[in-house]
Length: 149
Image 1 (cartoon, one colour):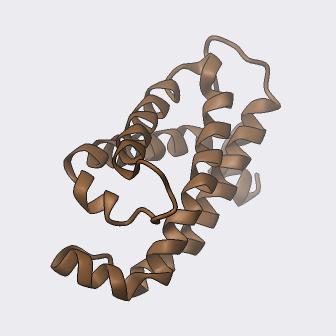
Image 2 (cartoon, helix red, strand yellow):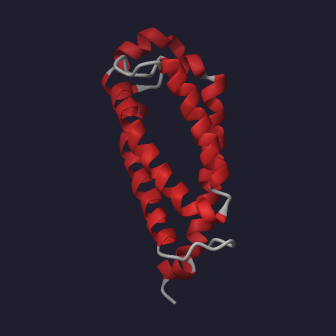
Image 3 (cartoon, rainbow, N blue to C red):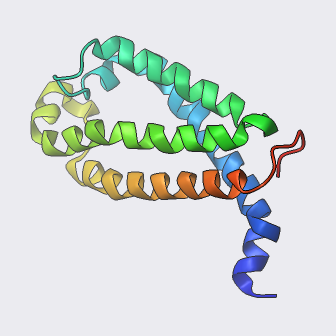
């Protein structure tokens, strides 16, 4: 059996399960952070986004909801697609944080995101988009059942 097939499991099932654990932890952690680091995250919002505080809180609720729906087999295919779209929606914020990194350093003081990390976050976001889009695709190919993958 080829190495890739052994790592992914039959039809990507093992990879999907490991990914589900990773993304659940990431979404719960990041979603919760939207509430206890609200001021820090609001300072990173581009000025052309209306209602920055409400958007930060709303995106935290969405991330927590996605972590929950990822556990429901019949919703999983939709959830992977939604996570992928959410990662696309976050790109303007990540771009803004990188472009305005020096200004944000002055605004946030010691709690700013270092410029190198803001730059690294952009390709990582691309990996997240591709990863979750692929998971949406492999789960979409399977019939929706109550037991999931």
